[in-house]
Amino acid sequence: MVGIPRVLAAAGVVLLIGCGGGGGGSPVNGPSDPSCSAVVTSVANEGWVHVAEGSVVSYRANPPASGPHYPVWARYQEHPSAVARPYWVHNLEHGAIVFLYRPDAPPPVVAALRGVFQFLPNDPACGHRRALMTPDPLLPGTTAVVAADHLLAAECVNGEAIRDFVTLYRGRGPEQVCQDGSRP
Image (cartoon, rainbow, N blue to C red):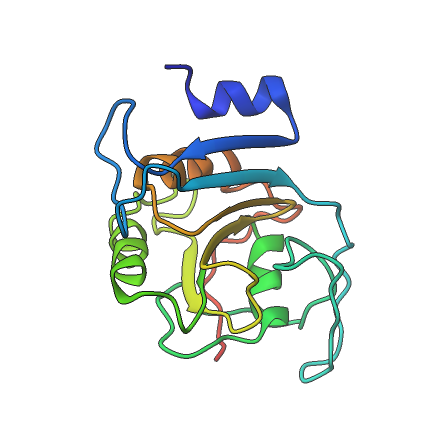
């Protein structure tokens, strides 16, 4: 099986990743569905402009992978309630990975995503995961994992695909900042 990073580098824009397992490693899955797939896409950059904290911000992409954001960013942890997008978009600018799920996602899917998040290896540049997890009521699908200008979206969880995505895209934001955020 060709590794996801090599395929992404060769194919560029879109890649389908099966969520039913297969390939090497031991993917962490939510509901078992062999037809479930994740889509990795490059997302058009919407800039990295700071706006006043509390400003209403609109994004062209859903979920955003760049764009206007608050001058402060979210803590690198799992958040039990939704973090406003302009906080975590700032984390993306710092090279972070953001794990998202709809609040109405099936509990086994959220648990599987949490498992991948909790066992994500530390970013060697930072000494911590440089990742956060939050529910997102505006998310069009069940789950998404976001990096600066890139998105992995799925109705299921494939730990191997997510780890490959993180390996490829973590630390690729326009700023390399490891410091933890202060919000919310």
